[in-house]
Every structure is written in structure tokens, then in C-alpha cells.
Length: 116
Length: 112
Image 1 (tube, chains in turn purple, red):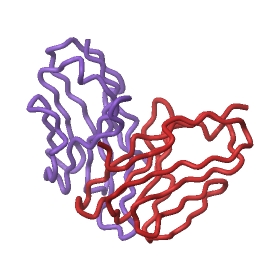
Image 2 (image 1 turned 180 degrees about the vertical axis):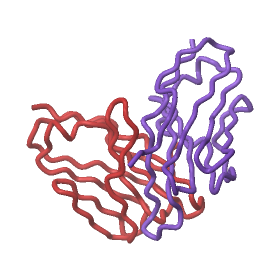
Image 3 (image 1 turned 90 degrees about the vertical axis):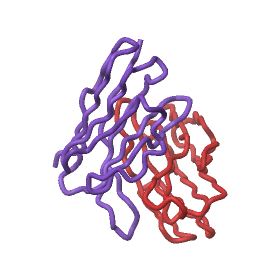
Image 4 (image 1 turned 30 degrees about the vertical axis):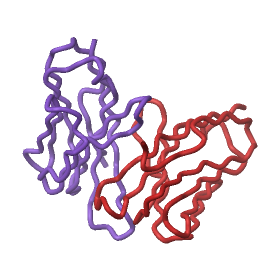
């Protein structure tokens, strides 16, 4: 089975450029999460969607960050303009909500972003 | 301030030793999970504990959920080099619904 698919795996960009990260969740999963991981702050939830609707975006650091989920099989996280402090690994994850045993969230392999 | 405090942050041990990683909070969680993450990959779920006092075993790994559902521990018996990685606890705080929050993680290195 295909897991959560993220692209690009690695991106190096110059400060001020727009960055778009893409995610394809596992088919049938109706929740999608964007996380950011850094050494200093660990894994932080940026935003999550349920049935394509943004439910909680309180973790989005600034207006420079935006996320969309136009359909059940695709989401984007955009940073415009990018800054060096945005350098991190960005993970997309998905799960099938409503399971009584607690969420089983599946993570993608991450997008490694370096802003120089 | 992390909602979930993990300790220790780093652990370097010899093959064959036992170890315990702790995950503590002042908040109550509807469930707690443990993940393992290897370099260049995303976290992979090891276990979910739901009931206060619950103990789950996964081969040499033992997971426990505190009676009050505020803390958890991961114990590894006879650690092996293949256990090396970043161990993360994560939980669903009762007041946050579907918002999974993570601890900062414990970096484990098992030397042969």
C-alpha cells in the first residue's frame, strides 16, 4: 500500500522565494496534518484538516504560511516569502478519524527545506 | 513549554543494557502513543495506550500508561543497536480533541 507521499523530499531555496510543499494522504483517510520538525522545537503541529476543511491552524507561525486541501487526495503547504528560520523538516501525516482506540497517524518521509 | 515532557533527552548505552524513557504531563490524555523515528524518515507508530494503568508489550519493549492518564513510560530490555533512534511520545489532550501533541523526543544510541 502506498503511504503518505510528500514532495519535494529536499529543497534548497533563497530567502524571499516562495516554497510549496505537497502531500498526498493515504486513500480513505479523512484527516490530514502538517507538522514541522526542528532540533530546537521538536515536532510542532502547524495545521490539520478534517474532510478537507481546516480545523485548527493555530500552529501556523505567521501569515507567510498557508495551507490548502482542495480535495481528499492532495494538500499543499506554502511559505511566501521564505526566511532562513523556516528551515526544517516538514511532515505531512494522515489518519482515519473516529477509531475508538485512538488515532493511528501515518507520516510521510518529510520534506527537508533549507532556506539560505 | 512542552505539554509533554520527555526524559532523558539523550541516552547512550551498551548493547544488552535496559533503559526506561519517561513522558510526563500535568494534563490528562485520552490516549498516549509512542513513535520511533530513524534519520531521514518520518515517525512510525509503535503503540497506543488508552486505559489508565494499561501495560502493553511489544517484544522487548514495554509501554505503560499512568493510572491518571497523565504520564507514560517506555522500557526496553536488553537493548540492541537496531533500537537506536529517536523515540517520541505523543498524546491527545482531553481539552484539544483531535490535536495530537508530541514530546521533544529521546535520542537513543545503543553501542555494540
